[in-house]
Length: 536
Image (cartoon, rainbow, N blue to C red):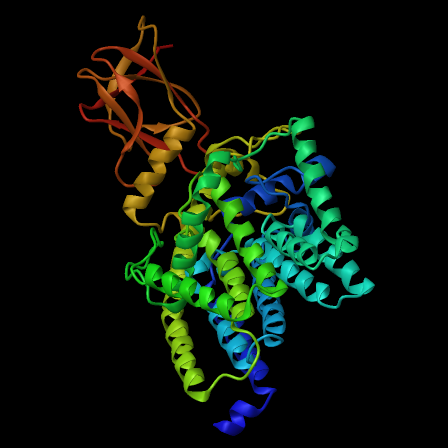
C-alpha cells in the first residue's frame, strides 16, 4: 500500500480509470435522451442564425459560442442526439482534469484525485451529466479553471491565455464571470494593476453586451435581477454549500428516485463543519492570494445566483436545484484545496477519505440511474408532443417565426425542421399507455381547439350516430343532441375525454374540426349524437 501511495503517477492513473468508467456509464445510462426545452430553443433558432440571434440572451445568459456549436453539429448530424451527449461528457472530463491539475499543485495528489473522482459520478446534477447542453455550463467552468492555471504562469503568454479563456468563458455562459471575479481579486490583492487588462477586457465585453441589450431593447426570456436579493447572499451561500456537500457525499440521497426539492438533513451539519475548518485554516495560514481567489470565485457564483433566483423562469432553491450543483461543487473544491495547503496526508486520513469517496460514488451511482430515468421520461414526452404538433398544427408559413419562448412555440417551430423530425411515428405513439393517450387527446384539443357554433336549422335532416360512425373531418359538421351536454373527442385513446365544446338541447351546431392528418378525430356525447345534413 505504501508503494502504491508513494508512486506519484498513481493518483493520475486512478483518475484516468475513473474518467473512462464515468464516460462509459453516462453514455450507456443516458440512451434514449433527446433535446431538452432549452436545447430546442437553440435548434429552432439555428437555421436563421445571424449576429443578432447569436448574441440574444437565453435565460439572461450570453451563450454566443454554444449557439455556434449547436449550429455546426446540427448541420453535420441533424437531430442525432449522440454527438451532443458526447460533447457534454467531454466537457465534464476536461473540467475535472483541469481541476485535478490545479489542485495537485497545492494538496496531496491523492486528495485531488479522490475529490475529482467524486465529481465524475456526481449524479445529483444529472441535468449537466445526461443532457447535451450540460456542455454549456461545464465548459464555462473548464474555461474558468483553465484561466486560473494560465494566470499562475506569471508571464506575458500566461496572461494572454488567461484573458483568452475568460473571454471565451464569458461568451459561453455566465458561470465564467465567477472565475473572472477570482482572477480580478488575485491580481488586485497582489497589486498587479498593470495586469488588470487580463480581466478588464472580458469584463468590458460582457458589460458592452448588457448595454447593447438595453440600447437595442432586445427581449429576454428570464434572467431578471432583484437587487434586494443581495441581502440574502449569506443564506444562499450556506445553503448552497450544504446542498453540494450533502449530495456529493451521498448522505442526502432522497430515496424517492425524483428531483431533489430541498437541502437534506446531512447538508447543514456538513456545511457548519466546513465553515469551522475553513476558519481554522485561515487562522493558521492566513488569507493568501490563492485562498482569496477561490473564495472570490465561490462568492461571485452564489451572488449571481441569488440575484436571479426568483426571475420570470420561476423560483430556484439553493443547494436543491440540479442546475446549480456542478458549478457549486467546483468552486467548493477550489476553496477546499486552497485551504488545505501542501504536504502529504497521513495514511490513516487518506484511508478515511477513501471511505468517503467510495460512499459518495456508490450512492451517486444510484442518483445517476435515477437521473437517467427522469431524462428518458422527459425525452419520451418531448418526442410525443413533437409528434402531436406535427399531426395537428399547420406548419409555419415561409418567413413566419413562431415565438420560441413558450413550449407551444418551440413545438410549432420544430414542424418541418430542416434538421429532421424529432417526434415519434404514429405506430410508436399508439403504443403509449391509455392514460397517456387520453392526456394527449386533451392537450391536442386545447392546443388546436374545435370551433362549435350554433347553425341555422332550416331544412336539415338528422339521424342518430355513434362515435365510431362519426369520424370528424376538416371542415364543418352539423350535429344535434336532444339532451345536450359536453361534446367529447378522441383521437389516439380508446375513450373520448378531450373537451371539444358544449351543446345545448335541441340546437343544431356547426362543428369545425382542426386538421386531422393521419388519424381522424371521433366525437361523442353522453346523451347520444345526431348527424345532420341539408337534403339536396
